Image 1: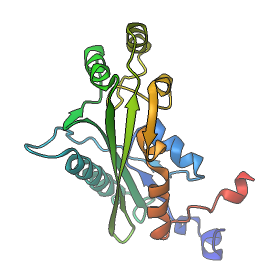
Image 2 (image 1 turned 45 degrees about the vertical axis):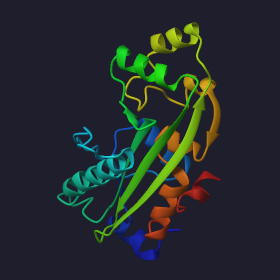
Image 3 (image 1 turned 180 degrees about the vertical axis):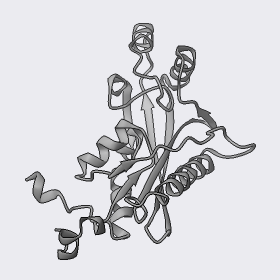
Image 4 (image 1 turned 135 degrees about the vertical axis):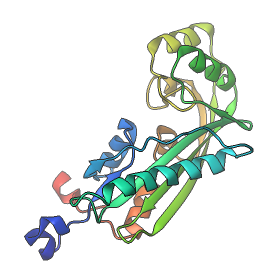
Length: 216
């Protein structure tokens, strides 16, 4: 419930910026009853550094996205004291980081590697508070795909669902039928580990349950 000061002064309400253009991350926050006040996707170079591990890559990119969004938000009067939330998801087979597939050949290469094998999905979540405190969480999920038939392979590529997805697939879509086993957070594979993200916000004073009565 909003405090009396927030009711009399709406600008005093805690605000949240999501540093992402991902409709999946937005939908997951909305599922938890959290509606960001602004979307400030950060355009950062996602090329891995030399000898950078997949875990280090995810952490670096999540923090970079949050810091870029913070610089923009702090110049806006309506967002100057907002929380900034970002995330970066990386799909790994062995030690190989799979791309966010943008063309069919990339998606096909990802599916060939994933077919019949286990892979890992890493997501790093970064939260910057209104006081510029930085908090981070890192989540790993293990996923095993069935061995894909030629028909499944070709039809999934033809669907286009893979476009822009880390590892060339969307578990919340058609590719969910490929998953034999999942160990860890499902929402992490979708793109935003919901438990960890909400816990970060809650722990830093953001009113994560303020809208729950409205949903009843």
